Image (cartoon, rainbow over all chains, first blue to last red; front, side, top):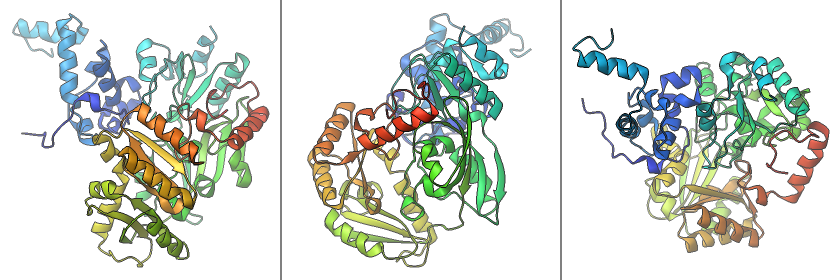
Length: 108
Length: 388
């Protein structure tokens, strides 16, 4: 299913208004600023290495709420890719990848 | 050490001193940055009281913060103790007889709207950013289009509960409200507000084509004698176009009665929603630095001329004498604001002054807050650097 219908902008255009924040279930339940989509964008923009970049579920809800139609998910994926290239991975990530390499259930 | 004691004053999950969380609180929608020392999120009055008593004892800099959606850098400060007020997020009492609702300062506009909608009510002032908290809006005396009919926060808050800088509890009503509303957390931290609510909504709309702001003002004069005028918004040609109107100057007038020409509620709501979104529409055009000014009638024409000269849009709550524009960068915004001061206009105030507009705070406002701080926050722990 193709979700992205409108033209999206890069994270440089973000004005940190926070209107995307209710798009994250983790954030709305906890009010944990580290899990706020706004913070994830801020981290990606600053090119900061942080485990918070893995808090995003990439469900597209934050993007839908963004008044500037910023491509948040794309930025998060890019930031995660950069983290992996630098050898920065979460324990869970390593476990999942290890299981996959061994041909086992990644979530076991 | 000074901060560690705070850990015992709130639940473990409401105390943050790790760098990651501090970074997440180091900015707000103003773009300003400052890494705080520690963040606490009290969830009831006693926790907040103890925090403020402790802060007062050790002269810590306290910054009350809601959702961090302010554009005036009021919620950011280096090495500060941030009090995240979103722990006060309950709507405790809805009185359909007196048309009031008791709301925690950390409740967001969207959450309040959802709760009231079930009973057919709404809070009259609707800011563009629904993530903002009620406490933050009241603290900055946030003006919206609807202020034309409903007035400002002083008119819409019946009672406010707050703690001052010494940790003393205050219940304010009537004129006493002025000691805490619109003071940007410099004289007290709001915890609960009793808000007046309404069932009155925009029902009809008029869209007048005008030649210039002076022509718009003659409409304003006529409209000021009419009942049920909800909002009077001026839009120059650029702003009009962004709302999908012709490339002319317009006056958008919303009524709670049947007085307007546009009676199709879908059309009415769609135009008003587009006006509400104008700030973010302008962001998308690169106009990210909003500038507001409170103007006398004779200054409005000059304001519009300056906008035209700078190639900036001109719009705003002309009925309230509050006009807006937006610049593309900090330098252009600063230069525009300084130009406004030279024509005697009052810059800022619509969304508070914060740290960003500190230099534009009128002397009388500064004097009033200083006097209040002597009574309520003489150790100057609350939001230092804001207003005074």
